[in-house]
Length: 208
Image 1 (tube, rainbow, N blue to C red):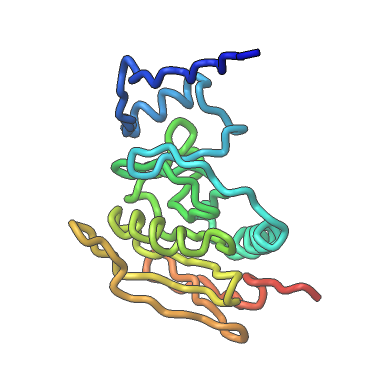
Image 2 (image 1 turned 45 degrees about the horizontal axis):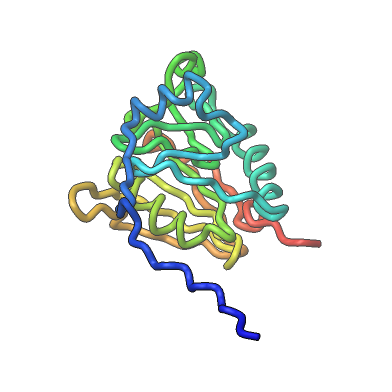
């Protein structure tokens, strides 16, 4: 008995061939999405050079350093400076949320707006799994905006990288980098005045 095999399905071309199109948002558009609730705190995103970027989940070493650093800075800052913790700042094409920003006070200045570069003395990022991203991407953004000083608390290598002398333009960069290793103290300079020093061993705590 002969049984016919089922015919192979015909290969048909798709009716439409679509090329993915990516859209870059302006700072104003991003802020409007936040204001209207399209994006909320649970989305864990930030705007980087027009792209909405997912923020990495934090692990225990990062959160431990975050809490210790917050406590040290709060105790050290004089009244004319204000500490912001994982809060947004406004740059030309970005709305990043650095781990810390030290801005000119009083706090009431930011009741209805986020700080801009002219308000900011220092930005701090704590990095372990995000080390390369924070050093290469965030560092370039902050240099482009001419943020005077940027600290990278490097938990991977137990050191604090301090970047100063920002240069904007087509090839933004910090012209000066100084690394402080375990056993050293990092000077906190605000408005040209040294406020105090923070031990690297405190900023990069290790398991006892």
